[in-house]
Image (cartoon, rainbow over all chains, first blue to last red; front, side, top):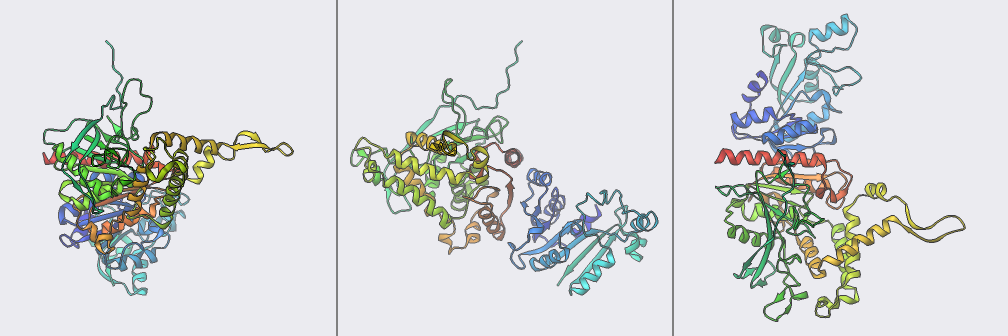
Length: 195
Length: 386
């Protein structure tokens, strides 16, 4: 997977990684194997937790929306949040907390500025539903969609430094199109940020 | 051809006793000259002796954790839901060792045993025992059984505290540490409940300053009240409401006809108290509650729990229950946060359950699933290592 590949390149050997919303622990398993990280994942989905326990991934049952105050300042080298930013109650506050806990943060989210989304909303007049965003508007965990541009604006307003940006298309790879017009052709945005 | 139904019970088990005559130096400064440990085992020890699991019991637990003692035995061991073939602690995969702790009253040396120096029961003169002493005595039992390293040490409540001490005191001898509904130390509220329980016992005229066996009596009323107090704190308000509500067992509260009204919960509590008083030694109860009170994992480490856990090498599973207010999820979170600070491997689940602290003894589906998944992986590790 391109996502794992990209993140791997930013993680130091043997460093401490916190993955917010770690799902089945796939990324942490990958980073443990490739970078020998000491990783912990936070998750509230019971199936995800069960898969982590089965795989031997350190998983902590904790709800991001109830705060991360139990983690001391700079207690992790990297705090990661993949495809979860749009599902938390206060994304900007979670982002602030991530930057407090981690020396660097990696955030990925579905880019709502993608042309397919624009087409469905602008052309069809419907909230986008796709393979990537398979939920109906009334029954979705995703409550805070944003675009690549929106996220960059948030970083600017909060004095967050963007170290890297990788934008992937529907085929999960970087292309000329996603490089030139990330907000239009990007399906998944990956940012590495720090303060 | 008849097909035997697949049983998930360990079946009939027979307790065994090991005698130790090497004195055990205790944390209190005292020493126990010689002692017996009674224990049971379930499941086969593998050839490399690597698949053993130690069960540490809680306040009133015994060595009898699973199975039955005879064909006519009606009541299985206290954790029979959890230990057996195909159960979370799977006896087809693991060799499970469960013992009665020193100071207990189920067969291991305790206050009701004879003090060899005086020829009469130890009674109140039985040495003060701490959780750390239990770990030391359990390690001696492990030596005797030829178990150099536990695949896992598992305990709930006071048992969880022993499991944590195993990880810290004997890091080379424990691969996984499972801590269920426990805490780094008791809260003031917890200390207070234990004090009420002890006062109930010592205020009973039949207590005779702990020499009740000499007097041919037992502080049954005090012990029953102690158990009643404890029992209330092990359940949740919600569960008691569902189970008993304000149901009357007898009498009436009808306007104009009020007579001897007794609530269901009253008779339930009395029954629990009486049952307990018939089967438990009052001095053991005092000893066990003190061990619980005195336990403070970080005390010897400058009150720095992460410093304590940095001595550990085991991987941890910590579990708590949503309605447990005696050892609340917040207490388990303190353990988890300290382990993360110490850079130790840990997983944590907070199980939704209505039964309060007692949940750890009950077959709560998600609890058993999570524990079972974790231990299956522990077993897979063994196969890889072999």
